[in-house]
Length: 458
Ligand code: PMP
Image 1 (spheres, rainbow, N blue to C red):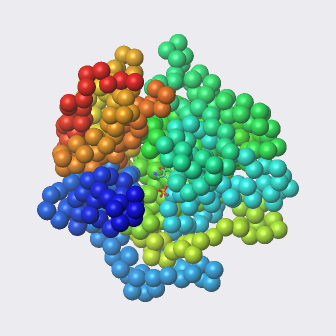
Image 2 (tube, rainbow, N blue to C red; image 1 turned 90 degrees about the vertical axis):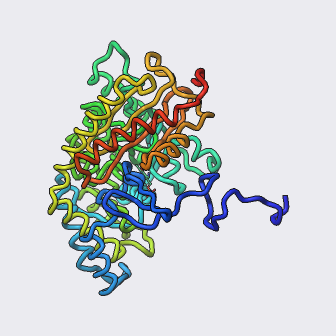
Image 3 (cartoon, rainbow, N blue to C red; image 1 turned 45 degrees about the horizontal axis):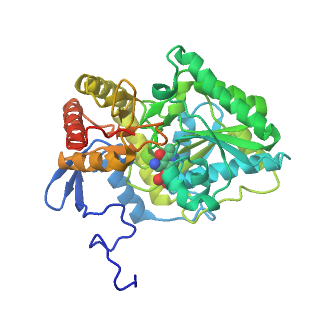
């Protein structure tokens, strides 16, 4: 087809378009609502993709951005530090698990993953272990879309076109009790069994070759807000220590208060070597991510032969860090993590009551205001829907028709997982809004499933 005759499915000049139809045009935000050019209101039950944790019109963040833009929008971090940069680093480090001493800021989650992988590699290099360059990650995980981040991710659809460009990574089982725990096994035994796959993988690769293991404490985009069972991460930590392998925890989606504690790893009682964050850090007001490192990692670089060989123009971006300071202060001033825990419990209970007996709801899970609903064709066998039905797209469209953004993910992989809906509303959500989310989620699921062929399982 010649370029002139190529058809486009949307009149938009924005490329690439994910969807084959026109999207509503968002024009303004009001608390947890987004309003389009036709005046329609959408309840933001997913914070976009677990991003907008303060809603869309918080005056404290808007003022901080305006103030910093008027003072100085950008101080290149090769030449300067800045007041908001130092304040943000101090706020985050002071609240972090012991030993997590230093942090730097990037423009988003994928950049944070890239930097974390390179930091892990350089740590071993500076300590005289240059062979340690292999990474272990988990199946059904997502760590970003740039080449290094995609290599450690295990989202087959996103990886497939670029496979020849990705470094080799060993993927082990996720901790996914709903599908993988045997009925004759306790949660604890399951957690230890699945964590021990890490030990086995390290031994097979040779510990002297392994740089780090990377995992999401609560898996987001690929498993629909799936926490590990208690004890899993403690065992993972022990295994990493035993073999001198670094533990990278990816808290891009589940961190920054989303699960009810500022850092998701607090609930596991585990301190990583490297921790990444993004999304809730800038709350969607600015694009920003971060990499935090334990003092032993920082010391290895500082005592080494060179600085961290990684950097981007927008490292430590001045307006972005100023916005993130305002986000952190707002968490405290409005006691929002307490609200995350309270409303998270209300939302979970509401969903369980509304959907607990739904014939296509297999599981309601998650922590804090990070909840997932797994949809199945058949509850008893947990058979997923046929991915050809594109249930996730139907769910997104159904949600928008119900005036609500929910975040559907999934499509089964070899019958190993189902479709999910993630709910991740802003931390400012009220009782009434939580009840509205429960109601609209129920209607969204029913609308999305309506008209599907009865025998639509894989
Ligand atoms: N890690 C995790 C756990 C994520 O959920 C995401 C984004 N969904 C990323 C990394 C990548 O972040 P970004 O899209 O900001 O590059």
